[in-house]
Image 1 (cartoon, one colour):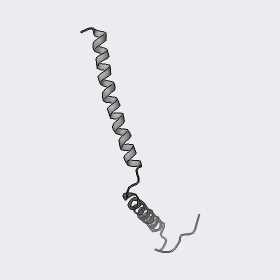
Image 2 (spheres, one colour):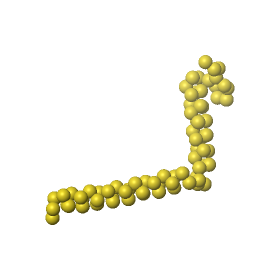
Image 3 (spheres, one colour):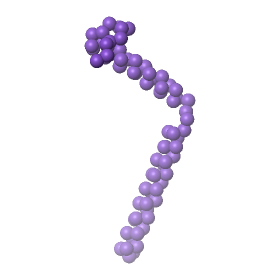
Image 4 (cartoon, helix red, strand yellow):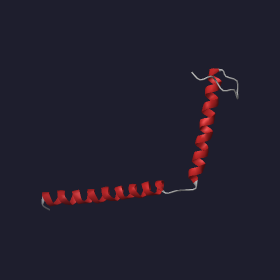
Length: 72
């Protein structure tokens, strides 16, 4: 086989595998962007995480629970 021809063949095979991988990633991005029922659950979890971080910060500053610490 001609060296140029074999190089071209390998390049085509590489492009095919690369293009199929890009198409797969595009499909995954579309699926991730699609509205799902799990989105509100993520929002609730973020709110809980935020509340826990606020409570942890108050505890580290020594503020009693439920009392707003003065703004600095």
